[in-house]
Image 1 (cartoon, rainbow, N blue to C red):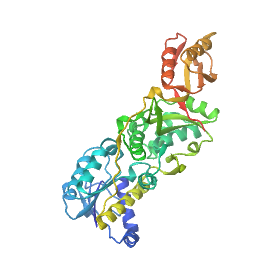
Image 2: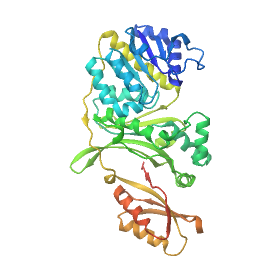
Image 3: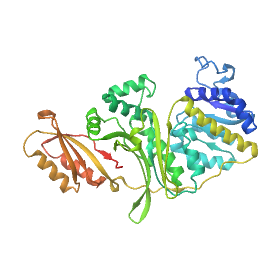
Length: 426
């Protein structure tokens, strides 16, 4: 069975190596010989890993998409274009598709899935979320009969690496980012990771699969970590917390019906929380269901080999379905109804810079009370021009927290309001 590979970067090259190293055992297990027929690249002259057969390389996408002998197309190029058009063209010409393209799926998965159903072929995407962790397959197959209530976790290795270094080595944000870039964990332009867009794309995919709803990227409430400071991390550590970028998908009661909350945000977690011990570029995801209880998936969320391993699993599934003339089962999905952010509740961490003079704390505390936010604890850090008040609150609605910050901004004694962070219990 022949494979056309779109892209030969870290993941594509690792996929080729896995097939070379494990091809005989794969054939023995599935009864099919998997063979890479052609590899689409942008530059034929670029230096390649020694196991790449350069005779297979091409810059002509049509030579793969239009080749009737190619049965499965593997897309590991990234970006929306030309990936979307090449995947659609491959499906229309009778090929099954395996992709690791989370950005594409977060925007266009439902139309691609509909096309796959029309032509009787498969689209698999295990590698699009959490690298080598078998999460999508578990949600699509093992847990398809479970009524899930929540899927939450760490799904971006770059930000987790940065936050780990800030906590463990007391690095400033800029220093931790520079280290991540030197080690290859962060791109030269890291905005997709730092602003939470990468995690939001994954959250859209996860919530669509887990809850049977059509969740798209624009439905995800997204906040990143670019405004975090060493002072935030120091406070969290001193009070027994760890800051993590969390992706959370959950059923929430809103008015007279259940809706979905899909968010990405930095949060303070107790150091005893299982996600607090997830370090560096690793990912971990909790799945909570009525019958199954709590499950945790943990492993490397990025990297060439782990991601290529997930791609290979999908290729084997696609090959088996083609061999037996079947396709993956299709699950119907409803349009999503998202809970408005201001209706959600949380405990909060708030840091503000104030004038260091009598009566300021009383005025600030009065604002919290008038806006319906109860203070759990307060700490003053620094004196004079460096005076900073840090608050931890009891549970409050987001709208109340926003009103509090707006009112605080009107006080002459408040010099600067830093972003607030949510606090996750237990």
